[in-house]
Length: 111
Image 1: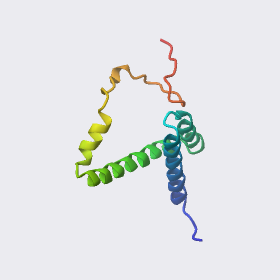
Image 2: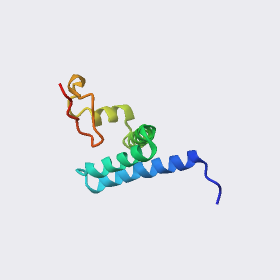
Image 3: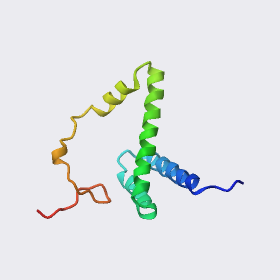
Image 4: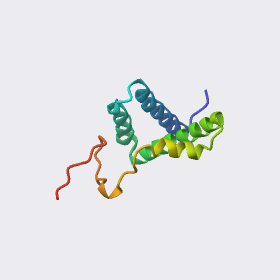
């Protein structure tokens, strides 16, 4: 067995976390608790950079899936992504709370 470098271990942890989050949602699309637990674990154990890295890994996975789906359907992956993400009105960013707690819920802010 070769010696693994810290970068390799981090990539393995991120890949596993991404798979765990997706697996939880495939098993139960309403199970946001498990996804929050995975993200919370990464944040607590490895810090906010790991959470950003997880988002990057998941975005890369979605891009790869859109590319493959586009090839299968003979369509532009950008169009597929737009159709997939724009089936609801875009959020009004002025209404999005600036403070979001670790559970993905808006924090009560004094005001």
